[in-house]
Length: 156
Image (cartoon, rainbow, N blue to C red; front, side, top):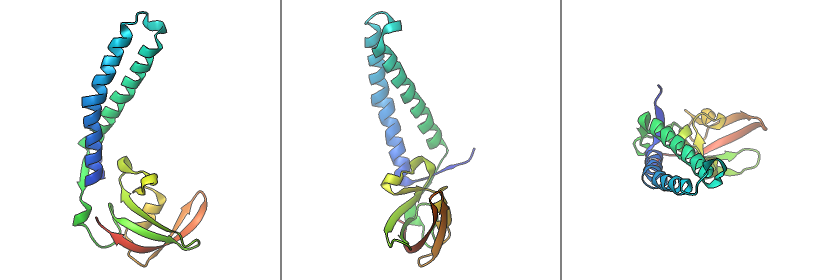
């Protein structure tokens, strides 16, 4: 299997989520299932079915996190410099609207556009990889073609 690239912060965040699921959420849901069983007939017990559904979700997320963590290749951005690569924090300006945006290029497991964490496989990230400050990039997206100028690259 392929390694899963993660920043150090992303790796620690996923590890913390796994720890919480195993030590807090799993025992809580087991207790909730036991309490729901005590209410009798399971076929019409909505509490029981809801708890089992939540247990299924928690166990699925635990397996997913364990898989990601076992394949993780942790990359420390502080050890990198130069052109844009994985874990770079990039400041770009939309050449049409002059709107400035700052993104960190991260792996799929930690990508979150609302937190400006850009998936390394996204069209914008792929266009930025290998570029330098001052370069312009053209990104084709469903909404049309956009042009951006790279104004800053940091590894923090």
